[in-house]
Length: 209
View 1 (spheres, one colour):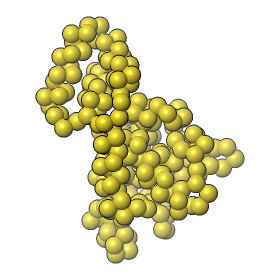
View 2 (cartoon, rainbow, N blue to C red):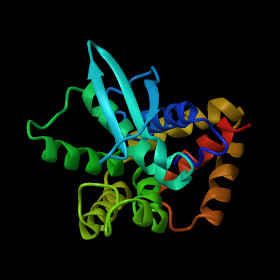
View 3 (cartoon, helix red, strand yellow):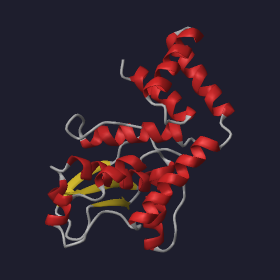
View 4 (cartoon, rainbow, N blue to C red):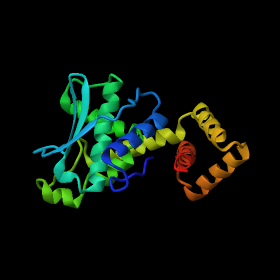
């Protein structure tokens, strides 16, 4: 899972990191390559918007949220999933249902934890109406989605996927024994992670070198 923050990366770079991550963990989607144009402006009732106009895609962020790193990351997780779903030709007719679908998509795409970290924040409560928080699902629904997707990742047959990931790692490091050592280190450091998450952790670490 990407760990970038908007203090370390620009908004555009964060979007690029999200798209690269989704391509790794959810290859069934048609993940776009191009980073959309990002605009910052006052939004009265929304934290972000995904807009397609004349074939051009843009993401708009509420300028009131720019200083709130975790909140911006959560908003971007939702808007990037709009982008991925749109590029994959997946959309619900009803706007509210489409927003809920996008919220669920965040968990499938591996961005759920980032959203959970920032969707409900005390600063957000103060700047918006009382009781406001990001998202279209209830707290219980978010937690259910979180548990459900994690369980699926841990129990679904993944031998082919893991085999491909292992080949990628070995191609990068040049030695199967080094691959084994890197995986052992991941298991030691993160005992609660699924095998797929451990393999992805090794790949993410190699990308940072």
